[in-house]
Image (cartoon, rainbow over all chains, first blue to last red; front, side, top):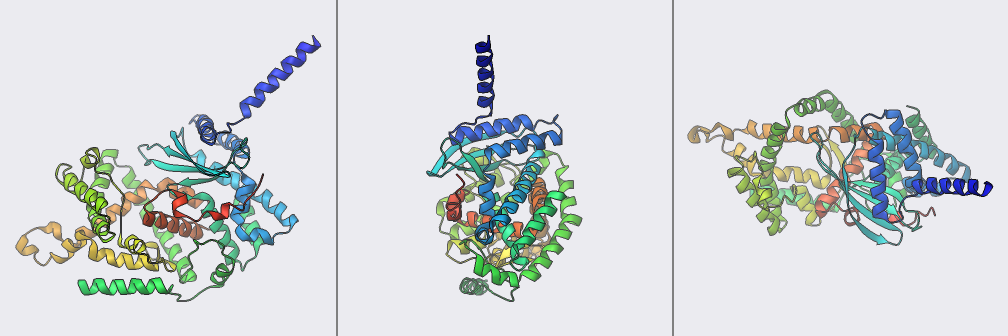
Length: 197
Length: 272
């Protein structure tokens, strides 16, 4: 009896784990993200529900720490450990808010995942197409997938019609720091203000 | 006209050599020191540009966005026909630039599209050329042509109403006037209108066409712009980045980021 109980627990645990595991193939990985997002972004779901689910997805599939480092550019070398810890925590909140806010307005987006281009052992670009609606034209979306750990690919950038969101963010961060005479703490304040609004 | 064109080319050459630094702010100095990206473009006069950006943003909120939203309320076939019509006229400027860039294959496609869409497509309202296999390669302008010829972007600034630009693209804007057959026809035949008897060649029609083109573009990008606006911590810097990335890919005639941007800065980021 006891043995059967453990088998059942093990089986349930195994199933649960499997339902949260994404494919290690970058193209399939993106396809799974797209499918999952489509289910979340149905019109009947509330904005709060969409935000919560998209945040959970992002935490599992996006390399938020990598994007945080990238966005800071060379300034990351100027931070001490304590500042870096604070920055990473702030960035995660900022990223999740910004990421979910961009997506929650979409209702059941139709995205075709088209092809993959392996750049090197660390990166692959997955190409996809957001299909046109009456209001919006079709949009090419490329996903920069970080594949250094081949078992666990992670998204590092979305390139929309050739425009990189990560690069835009990096240049924004740089501009905030530069217009405040190189004071990185001003960026921290700006990020706090953004997440508080 | 040839003289004016030569003047533009000389000006473009100057823009390539120097970056028209009419004044700098502290941030511009810092940018020079701290930039690691090869893609960074210096500001010409950041303070003035930020003020112009505020003005344009105000005008957009007060005028352009409401007009674009009104336009978006029109039925889809009307909007599509309007976009096709203005796009067909705009393709003449593209054709001039295809030729200047020495891209005769694309010039052939552009000319074929214009001929078919203007006749079979009833003044460009419909787009039978695409169905007949004449590919739309996208718009070209003189700023892109200068880029293809190897002219550096020069410094970045913001023009009132017209928005973000660079020294090269500002020269391109002037060049477009001379290269755009629609401008030439509407501006240089008006005097003869009495003889020709065709009011369609009047100057104001050129501005209707350009205005409609702008409204159509703005209407197609309402959500995208709202999203950028909502999620930016420095909207001016966002727009600058997006503008410069867009121009790079247009000059390279590629939407692939790895062909248009230096992405070596990703290589040093290791998280696992």
